[in-house]
Amino acid sequence: MADDDSHPPDGCCELRAGQISYGPAPQTPAQESEEAAFLRPPEIFPHLVWLGIAATLGYLVALPILGFFVSTVLFSGALIYLSQYRNMLHIAVLSVVFALMFMALFMRVVYVALPIGIEPFARVSLAIMSVIGVS
Image (cartoon, rainbow, N blue to C red):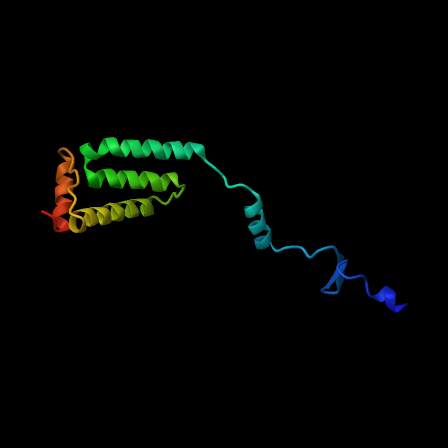
């Protein structure tokens, strides 16, 4: 054999684990999915956008009736669910924590009066207000 036959031209093949493969090296699945994410347009779910708008309008209607706390728990839970997260226990806990944090922020830090709703929801709002120290 001549020396020219033992060395292929640059870039035409690759030696791996005792095998010769011609062409570029295959990519790992992570590299392929990363490149595909840049080449493929993002998925758009217009029905979820419209449901989010409907939930926001429903929140605005429910706010004076149900009060800030109850309305915010329902609204944030609906938005988390619409974002396709399906663990209902996590959704419930996150919604209540979110509503409590915003209620405390608005009433104790910013001093904004929030709607308490009509009976029986007003009792829930007043009980929450007493727990967070707002009279």
